[in-house]
Length: 136
Length: 169
Image (cartoon, rainbow over all chains, first blue to last red; front, side, top):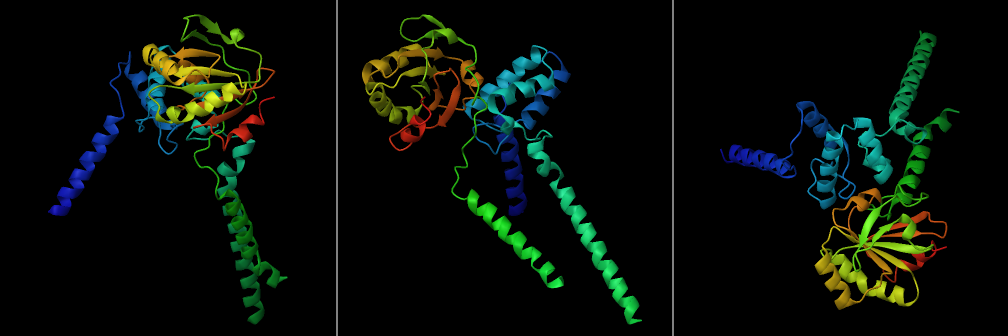
């Protein structure tokens, strides 16, 4: 029972914490509100580094949320807003890195390693089969 | 040949170890500025002391420092005496009073001294965002061709000044 209570309290605290970081904002449409939510979740807070803009209570995150709200209401596209942020804070603010030569290994490295693994696996299988063939 | 293959994991381990070792001791809070190698963004700001409107063209010819500060910022209190020292040794510093109000800022400069050639008011913090500032204090080095060449986050002091000074050209 105590455990259930503890878990319940934790959940309530987590919910209230994440609600705490968000100001009340008025949007002209539901679409704008959804776009705002997805942008602040995808952009990294430049001050606190391991939080996105939606989670952070730092001064700069509050300012940047307000700025994104304004830019959306001014009719800027998502791409324009992301470019605006990258121009000022660098690609660092992107939680979803761009595809470029610098991030090539980041995006495709795991697949390359998987490919090497499969090749090695097949090579071992083949040599085992050959050896067994000889033994028979 | 097969014996050589057995050493591949060991070589892999050595390379990975070397890469990780080189990353040790690096400042994890360090964030490269997107402004390095670019000229200052356009701005229109009012000066703190005489309410004059300033734009990019009104700034002096470099090299000079741009220092973001605010009376609300504890680290700026720590930094202030060293800025006074720099100013008295002839380093030009442009101040940006970041997300602050005029009366306490004026009082600060009267009480503690003014190391700045001019202080610009950025009450809302829009110029700060254009400069990619994440807090105060932050200091930028602008070189003689008007290009931002360095950004320092945190307090400028006797320890890190020699490094920053290298960029003042």
